[in-house]
Length: 69
Image 1 (tube, rainbow, N blue to C red):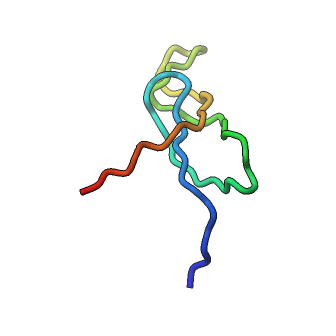
Image 2: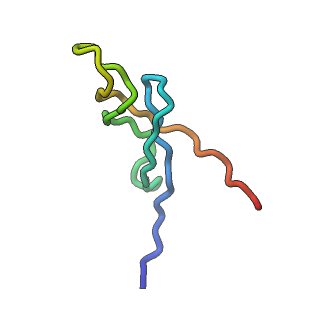
Protein backbone atom coordinates (compact mmCIF):
# COMPACT_ATOMS: atom_id res chain seq x y z
CA UNK A 1 0.00 0.00 0.00
CA UNK A 2 1.31 3.46 -0.87
CA UNK A 3 2.11 6.02 1.80
CA UNK A 4 0.22 9.27 2.03
CA UNK A 5 2.43 12.04 0.71
CA UNK A 6 2.43 15.73 1.61
CA UNK A 7 4.15 16.61 -1.66
CA UNK A 8 2.39 18.95 -4.05
CA UNK A 9 3.04 19.36 -7.77
CA UNK A 10 4.68 22.65 -8.81
CA UNK A 11 5.38 24.13 -12.24
CA UNK A 12 8.93 25.28 -13.05
CA UNK A 13 8.87 28.00 -15.76
CA UNK A 14 11.91 29.03 -17.82
CA UNK A 15 13.31 32.48 -17.07
CA UNK A 16 14.45 32.75 -20.71
CA UNK A 17 10.87 33.51 -21.73
CA UNK A 18 10.47 30.52 -24.05
CA UNK A 19 7.45 29.08 -22.25
CA UNK A 20 9.23 25.77 -21.62
CA UNK A 21 8.35 24.19 -18.27
CA UNK A 22 9.08 21.27 -15.99
CA UNK A 23 6.82 19.81 -13.30
CA UNK A 24 8.25 18.71 -9.95
CA UNK A 25 7.00 17.58 -6.57
CA UNK A 26 7.74 19.67 -3.49
CA UNK A 27 7.05 19.06 0.18
CA UNK A 28 5.77 22.41 1.53
CA UNK A 29 6.47 21.38 5.13
CA UNK A 30 10.22 21.08 4.58
CA UNK A 31 10.76 23.54 1.70
CA UNK A 32 8.94 26.79 2.41
CA UNK A 33 10.62 29.07 -0.17
CA UNK A 34 9.97 28.96 -3.92
CA UNK A 35 12.14 26.59 -5.94
CA UNK A 36 14.81 27.91 -8.32
CA UNK A 37 17.08 25.60 -10.28
CA UNK A 38 19.26 25.55 -13.37
CA UNK A 39 17.86 23.13 -15.94
CA UNK A 40 18.09 22.54 -19.68
CA UNK A 41 15.79 24.55 -21.94
CA UNK A 42 15.86 23.22 -25.54
CA UNK A 43 14.30 26.44 -26.93
CA UNK A 44 16.62 28.94 -25.22
CA UNK A 45 19.49 30.44 -27.21
CA UNK A 46 22.96 29.70 -25.89
CA UNK A 47 24.89 32.98 -25.42
CA UNK A 48 28.30 31.43 -26.16
CA UNK A 49 27.49 29.50 -29.33
CA UNK A 50 24.33 31.24 -30.57
CA UNK A 51 22.65 27.87 -31.04
CA UNK A 52 19.47 26.54 -29.49
CA UNK A 53 19.61 24.72 -26.16
CA UNK A 54 20.99 26.19 -22.96
CA UNK A 55 20.93 25.74 -19.21
CA UNK A 56 18.82 28.54 -17.76
CA UNK A 57 17.21 29.36 -14.43
CA UNK A 58 13.79 27.82 -13.86
CA UNK A 59 11.54 29.39 -11.22
CA UNK A 60 8.47 28.02 -9.48
CA UNK A 61 5.20 29.45 -10.79
CA UNK A 62 1.57 28.97 -9.84
CA UNK A 63 -0.13 25.85 -11.19
CA UNK A 64 -3.06 26.48 -13.55
CA UNK A 65 -6.54 25.68 -12.16
CA UNK A 66 -7.88 22.19 -12.66
CA UNK A 67 -10.29 21.87 -15.59
CA UNK A 68 -13.73 20.55 -14.68
CA UNK A 69 -15.56 18.34 -17.19
